[in-house]
Amino acid sequence: MTESDFAWTAVVRLRLDDTTLADWLDQALRPEASREVPRAQAEIRRGEGNSLELTIRARDSGAMRAALNTYLGWIHLSLATARSARGQN
Image (cartoon, rainbow, N blue to C red; front, side, top):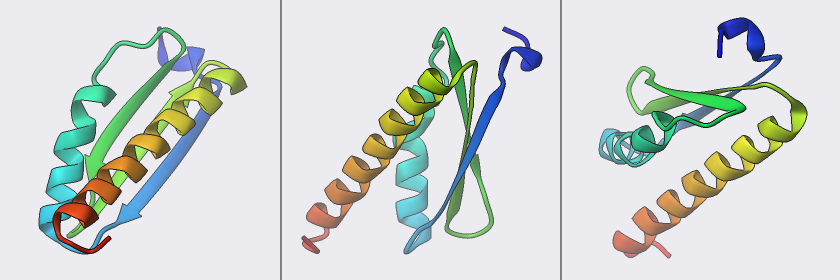
């Protein structure tokens, strides 16, 4: 698909507690962002310090909803796992 095929764009910016957590989340999400999906694409970029930026582009509102739900779920699960591993339930 070309850039013009994507009518919807969403940007999710995360500011995390520390650089290690930002690195870990980046590594956890990057393989998923690089996967080929028919109606959407995602890109992850490291921001300054402890931040990450997830950009999702989708062909239509249904694809955007599905992609956002999926990525936000993965982010939530990853951060909950990190908190649990650190004993911060």
